[in-house]
Length: 225
Image 1 (cartoon, rainbow, N blue to C red):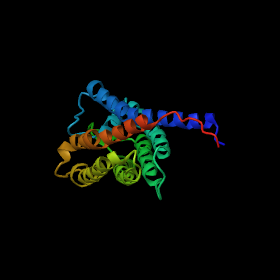
Image 2: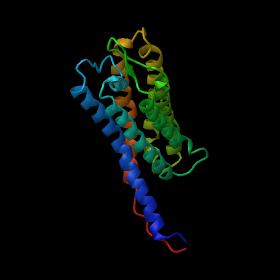
Image 3: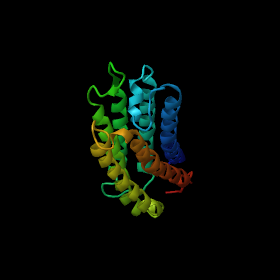
Image 4: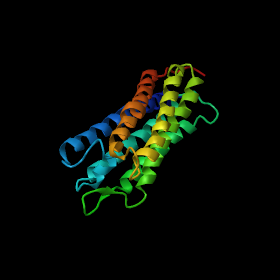
């Protein structure tokens, strides 16, 4: 017999997970926008990636921003997994969100640094963080769309989330090949393209999913067994 306390506990966790999923992109965006406005006069949101904020003497703030987003994303992934009907390999989508969170942790652990000329550079391993986050977040959306399609409560989001996943993968390839590398044709607008990927593709999809989870969470009623 399932007790009321267990059912309520599960529902409460999903409710908090939905809040974490909505808060993560918003808090992260507010964090880097505030730093861009206040902390660095020589920082260009058009040319510089968000991670370049770590190269500033106050770069620990952006490192904390990465870690806070990672924690919220992990909570969201766990709650989301419980909020969708189980399917074969259904764990893959939430697991990929968890892997994206690991990418955020790596971005904090291996920050960009500033060279003698004042330019941000990667002393090693930070590139792995970017690859992990952008690829896994896009793949997570794509895989989740298949699981959504199998659940009537989520089916209405399946196409949008799938398209967002495909778009995210396209942006990942564009950033990795044509924008981020030194000397790449779009390198001068790498920061702008990175922000477009986050603010126009990845974050709206995550927010939409989090809000749907929040709406679906209902306090369960006890049924005799």
